[in-house]
Length: 448
Image 1 (tube, helix red, strand yellow):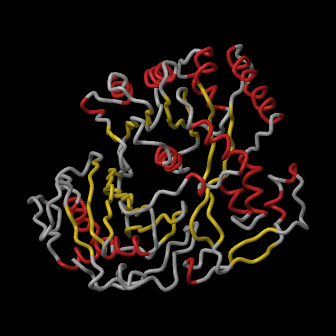
Image 2: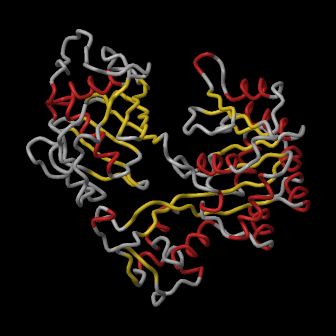
Image 3: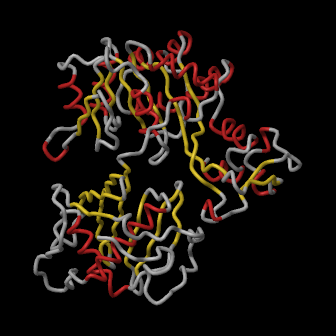
């Protein structure tokens, strides 16, 4: 079903302007007009092609067979793919339907949609995702598989009931996207050497830390994709599998069926693995099982939600992992964030503003220092940024550090020792990349 929409203007009805509370400008510029032969073929979660939409009869839900509604749904998706958005947010409000796209980690407000068309639009998207349109007061999750030209796209659809209707968020996953090599992640030379040493160890645990959306999974995918899968048995436990990797056995947990991370990990230990990727350590049982596995000759890679690399030690202890086990099995933790890269087509030199200096003055940044920013052009949709890169801090353990952890020294003492050994912090790495023109000082301040 191809839609002859100009994705910059024709999605909305009535030419309404962006809401005045918008924190970021709408993505503008010459967004490609998506017309045949470039088209989308929607498939339901069961893999069957959706030739038409047949909603269940339900009072109050207009019939989404209306071609205009289908075209609107397709146009929303087409624009998101065309501008390389990662998420689509459709949020009903009392007098309008809010539409936003997340691009390079930042939400951009678009022209609001006609509020009267929200119910049939929501029904149309739910049917495409094989969700129950009769259930409007409980959260639901589904998938839509799309063919966009020669690309295979999957949308992870999530609904959440609000007082004004169901909020819909769709995560866009391009199955044909190539994973970055470990050398392209953005690690410094020193951190890259240590990173490679850690992921090539035969046993122990390596953690990547940071908030949701900081690129932790991509880093781990790149790590195991660089390893020798022909002579090593590499297995993953994920929720869900976000990228299919060649020669690696990938598995998904099913919490509703009692098959969580801890249960999957215990089962895998009887499956003769060499390397295990655990999508996330979120509870004490999973943490303890992962460390037991790492202490018995397996290399375990996982993620942890902490604000810094060093605070992973404190978090693990909070989860109930014994200090001696953390000290003996933890190889390193990598803290990371994602910052937007300055568009190379409109980069320019700038002096830092006074308000941007306040958080970095202690690092020697002066008002006379030169940094860079993007002016905004059609290539970056007038945002000044195009793509993202990681900023990192690598906390690697040596024998002295292991002894300090085993003796329960404070987090600040661990950080001081690591800094004396040459560890750079997230802020320092961000400033280095800002000085080099890879990102802006404002972007580093925003993320940190």
